[in-house]
Image (cartoon, rainbow, N blue to C red; front, top):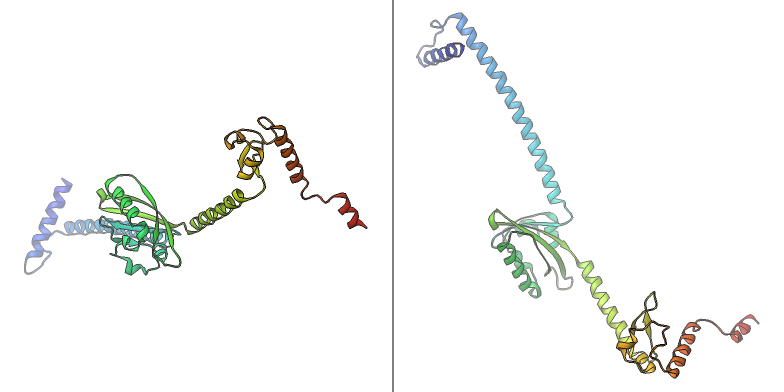
Length: 269
């Protein structure tokens, strides 16, 4: 009954407001007071809802600000790519990685920055990324500079049915440089080891032979396959002369850095 009464009040108020001359004569004083009270209640509800909406908006803006800070100031490059490889979004680290202003990267092809050396690998990587549902990764050389090549490890995943891809890119220049220096060092070591005129045998901590140079193989007159199966002090398979040679060489090696008695006496006098 109360709801019906309210509906009647609303109807009468609406009809009254539609008339050219607004008058409250048709409403009883008690009805008017009831209508005012009802409007006040609705105003309080609307004010409360508005406060909740303002609070939610503030929280959303704060969350967006935090996301933007994390995105823009992350130490790795974040890229959002279209299905055709165009760049939709990129953070500051990503722009810095490629050495191009962020605004100029938008709508440009990421593949256009890949070096010719890695273009085929990047193409295969992107095709696998679009055709699959999991995460793909690769190591690509970018053309940041002819003098300063940029090696990047890229991990990416597709979303929205392959329409959008998100990629994380991290420079691996330091690791690549270390690998290159290690390869050069190992080549130099191998060349010196193989060409050294004296026999050299390298053993592990337990005495097992790991490596032997050609001079040692010729000196001991033992096939390399058999020699590497022995322990460093194992005489098995060696002739008496070769065994004496091995003992002599070991003795010379052990005493290389020790001055003899005559040298000691000369230094002390």
